[in-house]
Each structure stands twice: as structure tokens, then as C-alpha cells.
Image 1 (cartoon, rainbow, N blue to C red):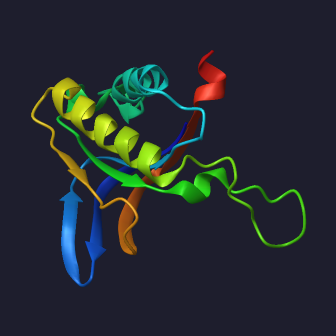
Image 2: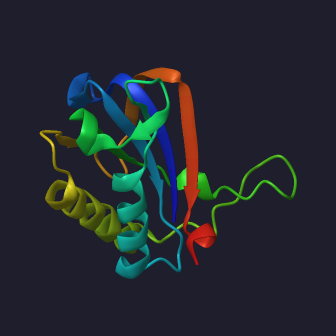
Length: 152
């Protein structure tokens, strides 16, 4: 599983001209599900995500998590995070999770983040498999890539 976590001052996702989800201060998270991922893998990733201390404290040090700043989450599924670009110029996606399995894990991640996010933040979302237009104002810029392979 891969999360691309972007610290934002605002972010939104639009589908067919309608805003599906929008947040102010928080994280825009692009979520890629691998064919071997499980709920146990998702649980580790969610714990790490919610504990990620990448907001500045009163001394300007990145020392605060989402809960500490009342931040929100915008969660977007993105199977292209498992693009294999090793051969030729057209990416392959054989490592990405099958749509039914990946969709189920995406929904699970949303549910668990809603249960785990404290401090007044909201959890917004895109729509699995939809053609989405994502806007964001990256704060910093500050982007972190979290890969479940690194959490073993």
C-alpha cells in the first residue's frame, strides 16, 4: 500500500463538475492499493498517517499531528501509484489491487480514518474509479511518501 501525503492549506476533489469533497488545513492523501494488501496492512498505514507529525509547533518545528492542529483528511484512491515503468514508455499496472479488492480496502481506510481522527477534523473523499479533478494548495510544499513495504 502506498500513501502520498501532502500537507495542504486547502484541497478539493470534483467529479462531473460537482465537488465531492473539500478540506482546509490537513492532508490530501493519494492511496494506492497493491494486489497483496490486507486490512492489517491498512491498519498500520492508517496508524502511521494519523500520527504523522508534519505540522509546525510554536517554535516552527514539524512536531504536530492532524489531531493537534484540528486538521482534516481528503482521501483519494489512485491505482497509478503502482505503475511499473521499468519497461518501455507505457506503464503497467499488474501490481495494483483488483478493483473489487482495492475498492473494499479504500472504503475500509475511510471508515477507520473517520473513527480514528480526533481533534475536530473531518474526513472527506473521492469516488473509487471515478474521473476526478483534484485541486490543492500544498503547504510548504510538504509531501511524504509512505509505503507499507517500509513498515515491516
